[in-house]
Amino acid sequence: MKIRKLFKKKFIILFATTFSGLFLNNFAEATVLNNSYKEVIDHVWQIVYRDFLDSSGKFQKSNWINLRKEVLSKTYSDSNEAYDAIRDMLSNLDDSYTRFLEPKEFNQMRIDTSGELTGVGIQIVKDKESDDLIIISPIEGTPAFDAGIKARDKILSIDDISTEGMNIEDAVKLIRGQKGTKVKLEILRGSKSFFKILSREKIEIKSVSSKVNQTKNGLLIGYIRIKQFNANASKETRDAIKDLETKKVEGYVLDLRSNPGGLLESSIDISRHFINKGVIVSTVSKDGLKETKRGNGQALTKKPLVVLVNEGSASASEIVSGAIKDNKRGKLVGKKTFGKGLVQSMRTLVDGSGLTVTVAKYLTPNGTDINKSGIIPDIEVKMNINPILQKEIGTRKDKQYRAGEKELVNIIKRNNQISEFNPNTTNLNALQNIYKENIVFLLN
Image 1 (cartoon, rainbow, N blue to C red):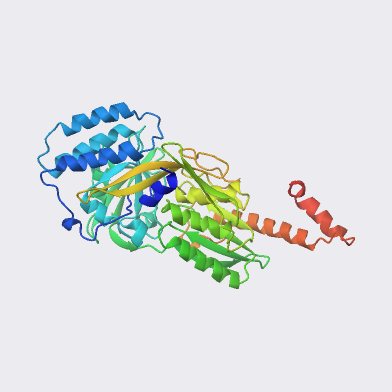
Image 2 (image 1 turned 60 degrees about the vertical axis):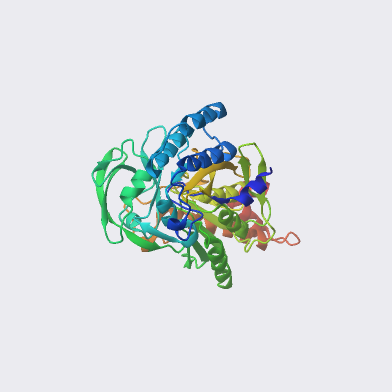
């Protein structure tokens, strides 16, 4: 089976933690196997056996086969016992992204397709080495973001219940709740711990925002911020670029900071908006089958580009930023990205519950596996020491944006000087300026 067929059969998503891909309109109407809980367990086992990609190198098929015999030899009196057995079974995989979702959880988590989230707006992952619950990134415009929660913060307790030994599913149950209620999180950042009380809300997430910024020298810059790679992100980005092109911008700043990821296809489509030709990303299945996605010759703009990234730029964000960096399409500015180079497929199980299973890893165009290592920006810049307001993101009060705009202006100037130089004249001044600005640029 080619990996292309594998991806066509499954809805591939790149969320790291609290997310969903396929949903039942009414999970209560799903077939409940009251006397066949083993069928659900075996369904999970079969998916893992067939599709799971082991990134740790510890997965042994012989052990997995023996485990099946063990779990199916037991009797399960209700769904809770069966679900606990599934979670115990998956804990042997050493993969925090392959996890089980009960029917209600599976039905409620609609971040990627609906653009809605009921909760506080964080995505979490369980670190297998430290056993910590780690926040990948707060979603912009949510209670967690407004409260100053940051990427890589650790959750020590939820409503005074310690998270030590707690799995992601139990943590999500405690954090989620009715709209308007509150949850208290104990956060560890570095060596300091503190409490945050957050209100649960139903959040409408607009994936993309854009505007025109004017530099001190009067250059018009198109600023595009993508908050999540959901089903609407590609179209929204396309519309933003087309609008900015009519406004005669001379270059773009693409802001992927604190973007935790989303749909694989969305990241590929958005990369194609900027990259005309060349490799976007390669995905490699458990069997070593490789599929490569390339530019389709239909880029919406060829103008200079700078991409802003940080520690919360993960998954699909890293696909786009890696494609732009490796194709030398633009410069990356900010901090090293999160480092999630694995692809998950969301599967609906026979009783309406769900499974997210790691089915592939992805490589940047240069063949780099960035899982756990992240992408190092071309220009490393720390964020402001003192937090800035949300409305100040993407302005000159934003230190990383300021550095990105400065680099973009330099690129625009170099391009303009080259276009001004006429080899058929004695335009020595333009040539001298090019040499002074960037000798290496000419040599390349």
